[in-house]
Length: 193
Image 1: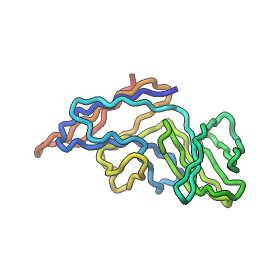
Image 2: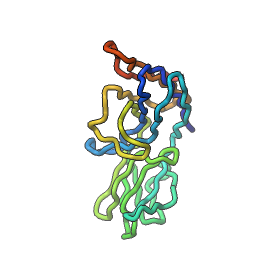
Image 3: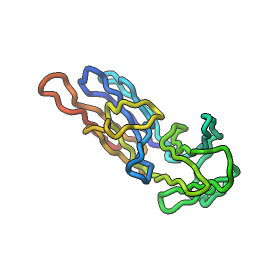
Image 4: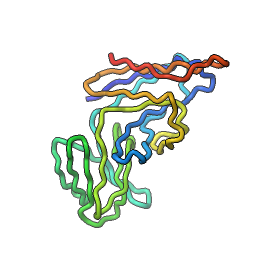
């Protein structure tokens, strides 16, 4: 299952701001979110269609920049002990991951559509947790790139929330930002179709 998204830029902002979509998957509110999708410099009246899958997957990483293969995360089949020595459990919408053996992997990345949406260190001493959610956030000009962390100082008043639960299509339109003294802020109109 997936939700089709159509982003459209109707903003008159002359510097063509980038638009970033992300989730808040960390339980620690201080943890920085990761830019899941960045739409750079979308022209006036242009559309940018994409899809968001409902399922999550994960991969492990080490300190040298190596990654394991991507594995699907099936919440309905938890608890699960995988061949890499991970114990994955679930409590409502919270996934907990713990290393049960010493191996080279030092981190885990949560993926959606094969793109990083969250990441945490792994340890045999404590568990790592992620919140699985259908809520996404969209904002303009976050000064980041896809797969990179978002600095909280860059989150601005354009921030808007949308939910993909039981929705097959969502239209998102960015408006505002016209030049001049009477400029209005960038905003997003979100409509489920």
